[in-house]
Image (cartoon, rainbow, N blue to C red):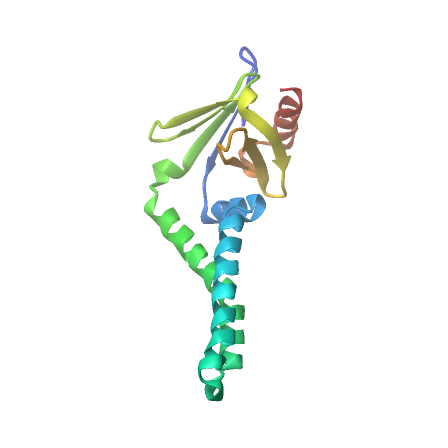
Length: 168
């Protein structure tokens, strides 16, 4: 972390790890709505099978199988999503995971070692939430959530970012 006194810009660098992806998913609750929709649909389908199937043939109701299916589905989705994120993480290059952040009074800028850059003006930031493992930056207009791992900046810089968010 460095401070450019002339431009009053905070800069920090971080190598994104798989744990950072998991922390972002957990802290931002990303995919929770989709998971709930899929889970409710699956539970509804399973319950329909349990209710409708006995009406067709009452002699072979498998209540334990239905209960295991309902209970096992969220666990399967959770494990499947972690495997997908692991694959995503493995497929990204080290240059894509080397992220630099620059924060000033006007913008938050994220760049990677490949040269890809995204600038987010503070006017587009809805709020900034501090978690144990990083900062969640909620954007306006359904633009998503940005994640800055806490090891990117020191404590004073994180407090300065939170103050900038409050004043913006």
